[in-house]
Image (cartoon, rainbow, N blue to C red; front, side, top):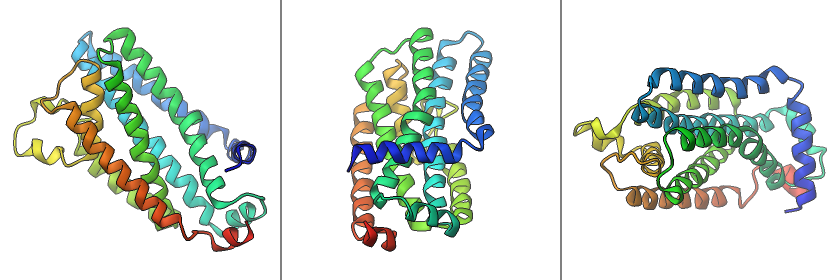
Length: 249
């Protein structure tokens, strides 16, 4: 992949979407508002603060790495937008990589870093390697899932419906806003079927909150799930998704 082409495509993408500057402004204002709410609701409780901040990191991952990335990519399949990308001298993987680079480095990473610094300053990150493993695995899980959904569904309206439903299933059925430790069986076992639960377990273990499930087991499970998603993504893209672009490239 040509690095120069990647940066050029990122610039083109930003210039296109920055016309709707209010949208990008809200991408940063909403997380900051939520952080304020977390600090106010914690009322000085370090446990509540750690729970809220780690849950916030997972919410950022879901909203930006999954929803925003998938929406950006699915827009490529709209006829009027497709014509624009067809005229660019870039391959389909380079176009996809530029979208992912923007959402990873420019959209999702600032709030994740800010929240992690707030967590380290207020509560403290007890086990830095475990916490970083949680962050890396969160990215490794959401990025291929976003691309898979986008290139499989393609239609933006259908994708938005799927993402809205998945938000209800994945977020509500995971201990993002509460402690897994206090959930009794059999609901606890059901929550552990959700990959987001394991991201939460790893992040909270790194910040000193134990959820009654080994963080090492969550790391292993998430690693296997992420690898499976990357393999599925490679299998999906190996023949090309935009036939015209692939033949032109």
